Image 1: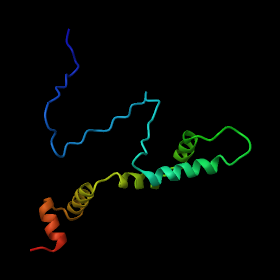
Image 2: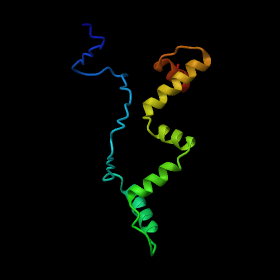
Image 3: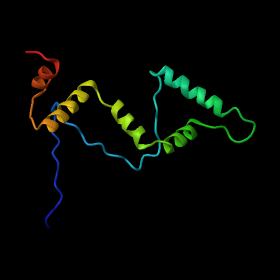
Image 4: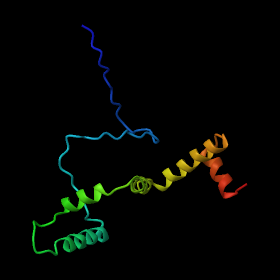
Length: 122
């Protein structure tokens, strides 16, 4: 019998610098952990929202989960673009700008050439 599955051999050692692993979503995940220990302002904002939401006389207590589910349902495409933009490092923004510039001007400048041109250095 023939085996049509392809075995993937994982290489050991360092990964190439520009290698990005494609994001895989685990649809079986049912629990999420949010570590806010290094984000004091965001944590204070969340506690403020929870306190304000729970200033009521009736109903069950409103939890962080309730706040998240409501907020996620209100996200728009514009919000998603902003979140994606915030996820980029400064270097990734520079590389993206270089790619856009090369595509717009039908060039293939290297990063070094692009920076020299943009900074006006000769």
